[in-house]
Length: 404
Image 1 (cartoon, rainbow, N blue to C red):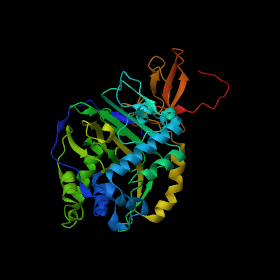
Image 2: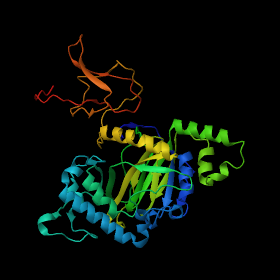
Image 3: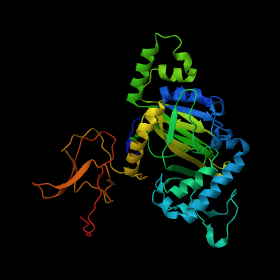
């Protein structure tokens, strides 16, 4: 996974009419997975009640039917509060403010601030009274430590998306959990990071909206538009082919897309949005949160790998896990390739490098060398780099203290 490899756009966009395929999470899960194969995005309504109950859902997913929104919201907030107190480094390592704020907010400021509406007060020595918090902020972090992930998942009504036995679709989840949290006490929507796509190896990410609402602004990439055209052409001669997917999915695929059109999706508390963020340009917006639990919009997300053959899944699982272990999960934007760059080309010069640590990776795409003509250090592509990839160098194994 490389969730920070983003391609951004500054194009002027217009609204569009179509909506994404939407399903009842409990009884239409099979249809949702089928639609996702074609559209790479689906909305599962009321997922907190249970997901895939008609396809032999797992115990974890059916546990949601015994709770209420208030109960699971309280559980999630309390659990994150405990994680923030017990494992602050796990949050701080990937903590990122989505917006440039004058305030320097930390995980403890947000997750352990008092007074709170829905979380019981802990002893005074572990609580933190924070005053003067901004009226609007938007932050994210990743839980990577096994203990933290194992602590959070049981508090969620949707800890996993179940496998679909009717279509033999097998889902494997990534090991980390993303968390997005924001507050907006204004009437104007609070926008997240600029529109971007993610260069990732997984097949999608599902976002469970814990509390509040969030609006997703989506626009298909050129590759996805081409896939729509190809899929439509290949099924046009078969009358029954489009009947196997929802009308909304067919309408989305059969539409002639403009490069400046977007789909707007409102995700409410208890819903799940499953989206392939490498196929859809995306940006999120948080509406006013005054009526939300704790006046906060919060969502948690997990990456998934999709396989349709159990044997193939078993053969590839070990390899994917090894690759996942090697990848660095970070949550901070850095420099990315604005276009395809061939191996050997100078990417950056010494004067161009920002005043920040250069990202290191087990799968680097750059080398740092000395330019013979200028005598300055330059960053050179060590392999062909695809547009949108973030630049990275190999880990420094030298323990001698050389800070070059």
